[in-house]
Amino acid sequence: MSNKTLGLSEQVYDYLLSVSVREPQILQRLRAETARLPMAMMQIAPEQGQFLSLLVQALQPKRCVEIGVFTGYSSLSVALALPPDGHITPAMSTTNGPRSHAAIGMRLALPARSICISRRRCRRWIA
Image (cartoon, rainbow, N blue to C red; front, side, top):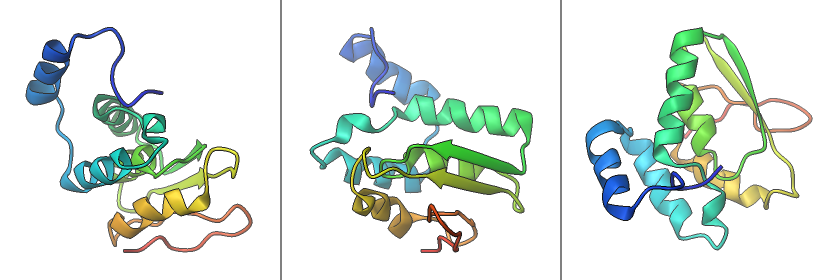
């Protein structure tokens, strides 16, 4: 993934963001905090997060698994689209970056979402 859609000029990309991307405030804050990290290019673009949300809304799963987590932008995109009883389990690897990166997303997470953050056992992810 990329933190910007490939192949678009800056002007076209800015237009795309202004007219089509509906990014919740929590994701805007997470994207802004992630942008300050040295490996910020690992984060998905906001339009990619919106597409993940669309897929979740269309398929209506109760449980999701995400393999590989950076700061949790895509995990939160999916979690926000899940039904109230939905659950996402992000599987983190220390090869993708330190677990402290995921702590950024955890700190901003919505209180009503249950997210499994441990590779060995699950616990609530509550802000």
